Length: 481
Image (cartoon, rainbow, N blue to C red; front, side, top):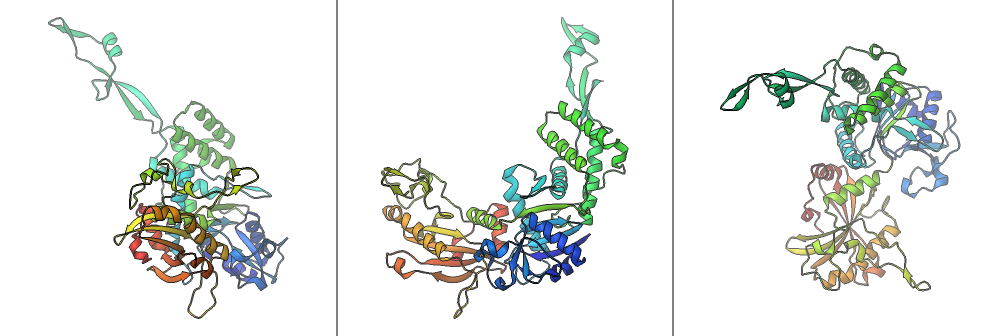
């Protein structure tokens, strides 16, 4: 199976994609159409090549159809993760990785971040949905089966057997009713104790079926070159094939019967997943196959990562916060930090609106002996901020003004609680190994109100992910705010 790396938001011509896909232009067009249909590829007008995707409007990126030899448009992946389409594996790495072309290690770490990010959902994305159609997400199913196996082992059904003087639980009713007792001092003593032993049925139909499906899944992922990327070990558990279990309809019927008697949640999930896998009976090699693992909203992943490692306290109750001085009596200890931001009052109604300013991250911390109130905004941008050059790819004016307003929203709270300093900062990812200080961005008309300018820091994505995956917080003194 052909496997290639592609970079998120990089512009590709149709000829370049044909070379990457290692196929004819006709098949390339077919793949492009399928990727566009499921929202992981966008078409951009060629004259928009130099503009960042965040600046493009809908009419710039939507194309009615794709033609062979089209030169008017460039194609952009808006996805981070793995795409399997028409027997082709595309490994889409994040846009900030600018100097590497085969970032195996970097994407492996990103995959682990995505797995943790998605772990709270507790669902298997068995289907990909688009506005026009629906496709079976075979890759998600294969990955779930493999990961579940390594966490929980093989599907097992057990049998209870009765033994004489075994090591299991004593069955007193059976012992009393079916064995002889010796009487001594008017007390009965039983020589032969009937005991219960629970053993695994090695020949159980569903255990063998699980082993067979896992063996097939492992082979498919190995052929696709994805075992290492997902840090999985291959398994070879049986020489049986699916044909050994009967016709497809018979196997599905047997699973349905087992589901009717099985009340263990994990076992039910495994059975349902195997049922779906067999019911769709596809292969990653299939021409019609399109499977996805990842996201086309990696900005939300970056926001979550930054919120975790910067110890976001927006949802903390005021009574639990560590403050320079005790919480003032005017504040409700049960109220959350995010809830003290003023909401707009519509005078005609005498009521406030539900929506208001919502910062990304607020951290209250002692840094170098000083109490700091720090407002972070996680920005998934490839900003080019070089001395003497016009800034490119930077956050827009609305982001800058909102960051000032967040500071203004908390100004009274910070003053009343004697904070030594307030800091405001954009956090952007970089492929480098050290935090890069990119000075600040300011608006004089707002700085004159006594508001702090907004610091700009490029955070090594590798460092951020390592902290996120291990549950550690970043040492804020490294930011040198």
